Image (tube, rainbow, N blue to C red; front, side, top):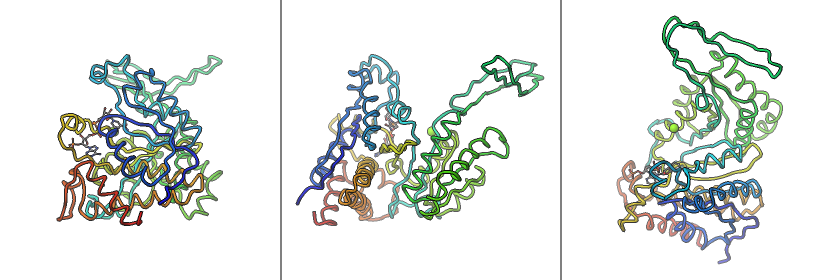
Length: 404
Ligand code: NAP
Ligand code: MG
């Protein structure tokens, strides 16, 4: 059988630990036998990041800007223990943070649904995608402990030296204060990424904040989304048959719990932090959560939402069998390949991505799965496979399904 052709390379960002082991297995078993795979390879494994003074991370992000689509393996974000373990020159920054800063993107996380692993919320039938704004608010706040009586004000000093002031509180005794900020340009980028991704995936977009209480801060977010929608996206949304919908965060939470799913929920930074963990745990498993970074200019980087699965890697190094779930990493590849196929008008590549995803889902639905899923499934006749055999089972399913 002829291999499926590609015209433009994917930017391939290799990573660390157990996911690096899975990465190679996925390429060898599920991609290279079927696709004439073209990638521009960047090794973001911690050793190579250290060897290149982290230049490789920046280069991979620049390449993503150039080609438009990347696929990334999970990577270690160094902490003190990792500096020792890998004898690092420095505590290098989180690669995801570096890449996100260069692409100015928004992260969209969505669960992969399979029959037999049912969401804890009974009404959820389709995935709920969370988009989290990744700049500012409480994450870049200045804070003070106020020891006792005194006046606290917000002061804005203009370039000409004049000031504008707003009283925060006249303290009678001890307390605390916090100063938050955000930037219109960042909110606009966030909104563009959300509107683009909604059009891309043909899903409704919800955005929520607390503008009734925060009449200037949160209201600015609401206004920026509404202005962009009215001026740039309304026609395209109507044509695509999808809607943009703003509501208060508490109303959004209530509606989400009663919904069927199948939409994108855009959240401010803190709301997104909290809600994404709520959504992912209620859907079942971190190992079944996909993640894509979308830049306002329409550049895409696909990955799994989970980390490098360190505990499994140490078992693997000890020669013990592992049962690590590769589904989210496979979906990172298929997401990237489908997007590449769409941009380059390669219908066979898009079809491959669809079929490989179907093969993953039907393998699990037939009861063949990794241990993490076996622990939570409703299916009764279950066969727990090790990391490698699970990937081989997906390959067999793909070949049976497509006659490849
Ligand atoms: P993790 O790799 O997500 O794993 C945490 C635990 O979740 C695992 O020990 C495992 O539970 C379970 N798990 C996660 N993915 C799984 C999978 N595919 N199959 C089966 N079980 C899975 O998080 P971590 O151990 O806290 O972090 C390890 C490293 O990953 C850290 O160095 C961190 O910096 C990095 N990290 C990277 C990214 C990224 O690149 N996007 C994201 C998060 C973390 P059991 O051990 O109970 O089986
Ligand atoms: Mg969090």
